[in-house]
Image 1 (cartoon, rainbow, N blue to C red):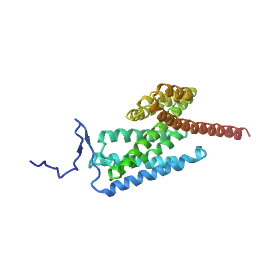
Image 2: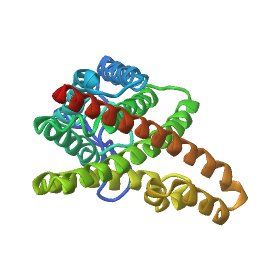
Image 3: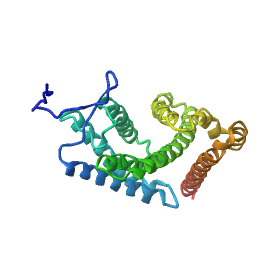
Length: 277
């Protein structure tokens, strides 16, 4: 007997797992293409921002614009997921997973800008703009891209998440230290909103091949050289090249973060000099 298909809302894709129903791609291909191009445009904005020599106040308007673009895409995707039941990145996404990924991020970014804290979180706000390429490659797979695109997406997604975790943890610690020194207890509490994001990214890493590296990322943020050497000693030969690649990315992130801190220190010195001049 032929199964009945509802003529109302679009049919959702069942994966066979109990209780898991995935969203289906939009019924019109041009919708997926528009979302794909929007993600790629935000990625280009992120690359342009990351290529700056300095991460001072002068780039904050561009960071704000890029974050607005990314959050707008997220809001649109949540709307079409809750409405017609579409997801341009499907198959592989449920409505709950999409909401858990998009909504908390959008809320946290809005709160960051509303409280005028973006100057303290500039580097993570810039690095996260590299992730839209990962979403874009999801959509490319949905549109029928060759199989190697999925492999590139997994490798790229893992690398960006590692870089993002490193910048999030370092910035999180520095911002908390500053708020603790300033006795800004409310801001110190609000700083903890970034912890779920760090945890979420750790969970994504745990699904990758290098699951054993996830617990050491926090130690690496504090003691990079010692943690890297210890990990190389305890890993087998097959994983050593992966370990080296991961820690090379982390060292690059820490180098960029140190550069940002030095720029901020010089900027504060110039401001103090102008006051006493």
